[in-house]
Image 1 (cartoon, helix red, strand yellow):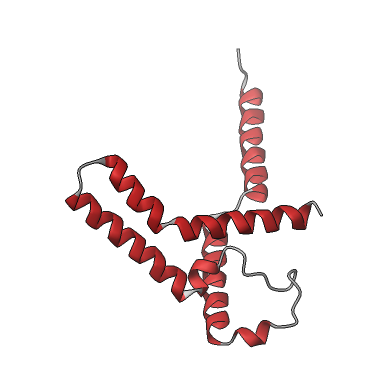
Image 2 (image 1 turned 90 degrees about the vertical axis):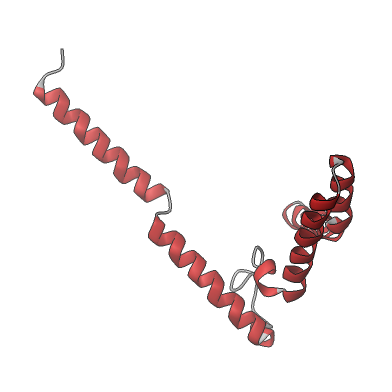
Length: 125
């Protein structure tokens, strides 16, 4: 049978767990600031990429921001989505729709593979 002291101890454990969780996990405010920073960094990079020349990867890294930075990449993505949606409205065969998607996204897959290899070799030279 639990005593009031045990219940108090349990509440302290819950409180301790909550504090530990807050220390280890990002909160909504943190995520907001990360997204805002990414938005601002992307805008600066698009405006004048030369201002980042000479900075080390520890000082400024665009990994993960490529979609925000590259207008061409965003346009290719929109074009792929539009083409696949148009194919879905005209074609009933899922295999043919999958082929359209595969063709429209082949460039993105190649970039992903190349980037993955580069990342692997950067970590495991």
